Structures are given as C-alpha cells and as structure tokens.
Image (cartoon, rainbow over all chains, first blue to last red):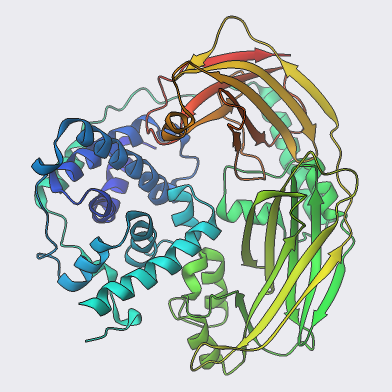
Length: 153
Length: 379
C-alpha cells in the first residue's frame, strides 16, 4: 500500500475511528493520542495487511489496541479525579448516548461496531479478536442492557 | 417513554468528530515516510512452482466438484487461515450422512477430526424442495447483511434489500422462515471447552452450517463418539416467536486422523520475554497442520494474573520471517495449571514439519511487535 492510498483509507475510516476510540476512552484528548498512534502503527505494520479490502477491520483492531495502550498510560500517569468528566450532552441523541455510556465496555464495543459502524459479525469478531459466538452473546446482552438503560430514563 | 430498539440509530449516540481529533489523525497519516518500495526477489524456479500449484489447485477443485466447505469459510471470514492439503482430502472424501427433522433435511457434507479438533459442514434444505428462507438460530431479527458479503449476496440474488431483517425478507417473499442449526456435540470427557459455529450460503443459495469443536486430546483415541445436534424452528413472521420447534441428537461416524510425525525443536542460548523463559518446543504433524506445544517457566514473583494481564501468545514465522497461516482451530490454548510452568499450544497450516521455525512471544494487545525478540528453532 502506498502513502497516497494509505491516507485515503485513513480519511475514509476517520469518523468510524473516532466513534470507536470514543467508545473506549470517552475523552477527546485521549482519542487524539490513540488515533495518531493507530495511524502510525498501521503504516509500520502495513505489510501485514494482506488484502486492502480488509483495511477497515484491520485498522479497527490496531486502533482498539492503541486505545487500550492509551488507557494504560493514563492509568499510570493521571489520578482518576483529574480525568475530565465527559458528558453525552452534545450527541444528537443524548438519551441514547447516556444509555450507551452506561453499559459495560465489553458489551458497548460490539454494539458500536455492528450497529453504528455496520460491521458484520465476522468483521467485528475479527476486530475484537473474539470468537463469533462470544460476539453474538455480547450483542444479545448489550441490547438487553441498552434497553434496560433506556427504559429506566 | 419506552423506545423500541429498532427505532434507535446508534450513530446518533456520537457527536461528529471534533476538528482537532480529525486534524491529529490526518496529520499523523500524512507524516508517514514512504520508503523504497519493498521488492520481493523470487527465483524463476519459485515462480514456476507457484504457477504449477495454482493450476493443480484449480484442477483439484474442479475434480472435487467444488464442495462448499471450510476453504470457502476461511476465505470469507479468516483470510489468514488455510486448509492443509491432507485435511482437504479427508474432508472431500466424507461419506455424506443425511438426517431429516420435520420439513428440513440436514446433509453432513464434510467431516474432519484429529485428536485436537472436530469440524463439520452441514447443508440444510427443505426436504420437499419448497420455497423457504433459512437463517441461523435466533437470527430472525438480524439484518440479512449482518452475516457479511455472503448473506448480502444472497439478499441481492433474491432481489431483497440486504439491510432488512429475515422476518421482513420472508414476508416480502411470501414464504416461511426457519431458524436452523447443526452443531457438533460431544460428551464432557472428550470436550476441549471451545466451539465455533457459523453459516454461509453456497452458490445455489443453500444454507451451510459450519461447526468446530476443540477436543481433549488425552481422551481421544482412534474413535470419537461424536454427535450432531440438529434443530429447526419455524418463525412467526409477525412476532418473531418460534413455533413447531424440533430437535434431535444424532450419532456421527468419523475417523480420527492420527499424528503423522512428531518433532522436538532446539535453539541456541536462552529465550526470555516478559518474564517467561522458553523450556521446550514440541511439534505434532496431523492432517490439520502442525501443532506446536511450547513450554515456558515464569520468573520468580510473577503470578498467573500478571501473565494473563499481558496476553502473550506464540507467533510462528518461517526462516525468511513470513508468518505462517493460522491453523483451522482459529485459536490457541494456554495452560497455567502447573504454575510457574506455562504451556501453550497453537496450530499452523502446513503440510510438513519445517526444518526451521522462528518463534516470537508477542503481546496480543500491543500494536507494535517489531521490537519483540525472535528465536530461531531447528530440528
């Protein structure tokens, strides 16, 4: 993959990447770090991408790792009470945003990948490196949890 | 006010990407340096051999009548996994076993087992050939396209919008909808604890269920008391409820492929990564590929929790540094029962035991593996 193509692919995936990063980090400053890190790592590792049509799943996997790295660094360096509190107030559907934030991350991320980003179960399972049966279970539980949160509002 | 799940647009839970984030991402993307394009040097002989393999594979596929099976599955979902030649031969020579459950017929088309895994594909059709839609168990409310390009293609073939769910599709086509399932099943003594199930539609649009089980290798001999759990349920197209549910467990006869060769690997010096020291590498070649058993000792003071926190996995490369295709088991096993001894088992898709292997113990969660030390192993 040449540089021009790489930039185009990143640009095409940028909104999706932000939403995935936000789903994990819920903090714009951390998202910035993770997004940059993911782009640089993806370029370094581009020889491992065997088919360009899998770029979206592949970059998602790299981004999720970058988010967890950012999260680990943040845990080491920032006391919890210094992490700026985030609200869902600026999302188009505030109630939905709050409900989504309220459910556990391991249920949230499969929902976001499949139902916000339109990934297939296989793509999402591959990006999350979990068996598809696990993914299906998490989606099922995630939907139930989300429904409970929305009903509680 | 209650809100229905179907009304929700999950994307509305996110605000648009802030400009500083977009700028940071694109700045990083544009900052990468284009190096000299890597040129892979191959000899003419290598090219000629590659060409022969492609022709031979194409001929074999035509000769086999192209049974829709695991090769198609890996091609669709796990492009870094391949079916070794010996496994393909066993799968292609499977004697078909057919079972009927009410209006639905299950035809077990390919079967494979060694001491570690059992795999099957089952084509599921309406017994009387009548028009009906078949989808995976409990998937009636899912969008057709949720199962990837394969099911999207089916929708297009049927003239349906791939984003509609299976119930809407059946209503549109004015035909019944069945949730179907055919999964391998084995008693707890033989079970390895993992399983995988998925489905694709073959070129005729027939539903094909894929089932994989891991086995307890110490319990498996030449015979395997394998069963297949079959289930079908007609779906009420208005409510999504199941009706006329039928299920059965049937015995499946299968021959267990035995190990063809075993080999220990050796290395020079010491290999330690993240507190784990390599003690032993043993390999076992079966028709499924090469199982690689690695033994490590954890350093003093390290706990199993510390170990699992990092999620180290062995990654195997050839002598040139190319990684091997993942094995058909799609996973690896880690055992810390005898802590501080850690054993790991993985499978690579090869047809013979390589003279040389390169091992890297990589952090499954870390994006950068370039600096992980590798060690060369020889027979």
